[in-house]
Image 1: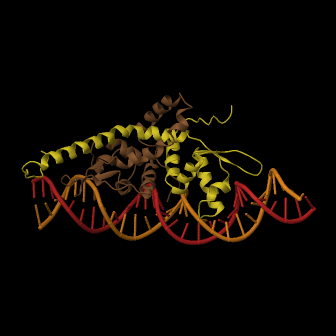
Image 2 (image 1 turned 90 degrees about the vertical axis):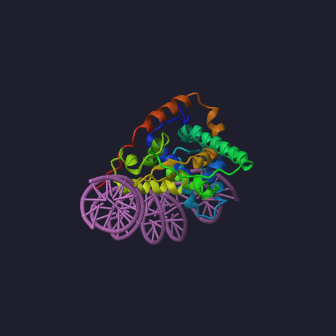
Length: 130
Length: 130
DNA sequence: AGACTATATAACCTGAAGGCTATGGAACCT
DNA sequence: AGGTTCCATAGCCTTCAGGTTATATAGTCT
């Protein structure tokens, strides 16, 4: 069996995935790869950075499982492997409800504000919990 | 206006967010905070780590905008601020198509993730003795 | 005032991240 | 064979991340 690329998610892989995504160069590389395979030099071209630096970034992405290496003559084209992105998304999904609630709360707050603009001001007091 | 700590999303904030999420201790802290406010000592309790280490982690999370600090007597309870998580999710959304086509195993994967991240992280590497 | 609790800060250490230059090695083209 | 292109690796340097212990600060309770 070939690189269908599925690996059992380990806690360490989430670490590696998020760490890989923490660098803007690497995120840009992934964005580029989202529109298709690309060779190392193609990937390096947009950046004001040496080729070995790009190779290092690619190694980070590869060790996180986010990309894989093909071969085409001297080229070693990289391809996007999205499984770790799925895991990261999965982790974040647990919070989606949370911030969606928050935005609902924000909406409600704005509603209240709007409503109160038309009304006599209510003096506020900050209170403590018993 | 001071509350809610909302900041305009900048590229640098994505850096900070993903970097913050790259540490299992910090992810566990966020998971804990998802079920409500908690004091520093409460947050520190599950980990085999000194209190200052936790404070450092909290500072990282705070600078990424992922948590905010309240006050209750001597306590400085932390609260989850999910806006950066929304931004991170937003970034990842662009890749959803890449993995959604492929897998029905996704559900199982997410199940596993949920189970694994529910526990406190495995203790960090202990290299050498002084 | 003085003790106790909760958290923050300082100083330090180790290792790794991310950049560089220089070099190596494979595959292609005359 | 010899030159060229594409990429990887090695060695070096500097900065930062994540931990430690020790100490400082702030609020609470006698």
